Image (cartoon, rainbow, N blue to C red; front, top):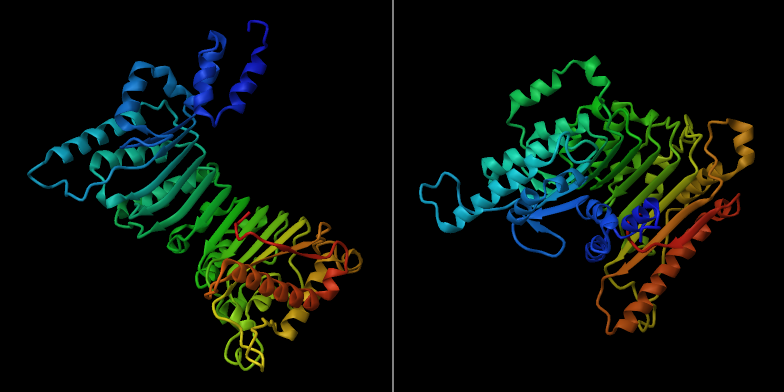
Length: 458
């Protein structure tokens, strides 16, 4: 063991960083392995009130770190599942269960307060309703969120105070908001103090370069545009009615000049108004663009009269997003090299039957004029000859454009075999219609590749 170089031991410990049992065994092999294994074991700490696999209870963590304080210096990431109570903390009668809860909260506060300055590199706060936390728990969680140096994530959080959000977006490099709802704006004095900070001094510290916003539409009105002006990565995952407001925020903030990767996900059915959605026209650093439409109703693709009062809006929405206009026929995005478009098609009802009423063959009809416009637009993004003739600001997607298709059959079938056959038949007709509608773009450069999509976001 003494002959092994420390670099190799470090690599072994890092390789096992997600396997706690192996790391514990490694720490017992020899003294040279102990510290390196322990550094990996305590780099990522998960805290909750009750026992669960992979988590430490508040009280167990406090006992452990009191006995071995050096482990606190190893913490890089901390995840907290806050405690809950249905009782009010103003109750005069405190029952044993509430006493135990308060003891656990005190332990949590003590653990978080012991993490050395400046704090962990990243923190995850999940499944929390701020209004149901005790003052002790609130202070502890607010403190760790504001001390985290690089990345803070809030997932499934209710009534989070606005001043915590504003502090984090100003002083962290990466933020995640997933299902953050009913944001508390009542702490007006704290909010005003943050907004009145010296703008010149603050400009030196605006380091937010990554923002992930999903199912958190309230952020649109609450994020001051300057706080996101230096973004390099942006993920927006919202209902179709909320997407335009997020796109307006992107334009107002000025982050279009720094964005390198953009994921835009429409989680609900498209409205007619979405056909006017546009990305910022100038995206000079953007190299990766993903556009996802999660809710396309297959009934809008049937032959008339079934689609007489329904519309397929996604071809027009795509054209609008990618600037297929006479004023600007493409995005000014010279660095764009990867364009991925995903579409999920829901089949809620059986297609109409044939005349003999014995079979139900799926059909798919997309608006001819919209598909022709989309086909021409893709050609402009793929044809190197047009790039040389028109402008070097025209994107040239030399890897081709990927169009992912996911089809879900939701009507009742008699067996799993029939269900699979129906899903295959529906997908084939959608793919065939897309191939015919994008015939020119499929033959230019690397072309448009229509691929099977598993429904998961990249």
